[in-house]
Image (cartoon, rainbow, N blue to C red; front, side, top):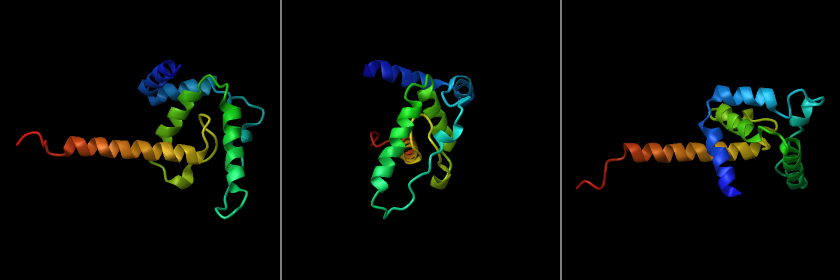
Length: 130
């Protein structure tokens, strides 16, 4: 199962942003929904709120429920990560690809960190030559 999932992710990652956007627009579960606001539930705001953990869990459950059967969930998530890559945290909103804004922020941060590491390796002097 994980090999199939890895193959799907590799295929999605290889697609252009324009192709991903077209697929999401044509086949997304959110497209044509009678309640498009469902993908933008109120986000938990107060860090000191005792019920915040529960609110986070409920928000994430809503994301999984709305996007769970979507045929282009992986494409939608990849598109969101690309579109949000250079945005500040405060601009991440709504459910995309089955992920809450804070989940996507973590994914984008991980991508940025990986990109910096790879760039550092490419620009670092070759230590093997001495």
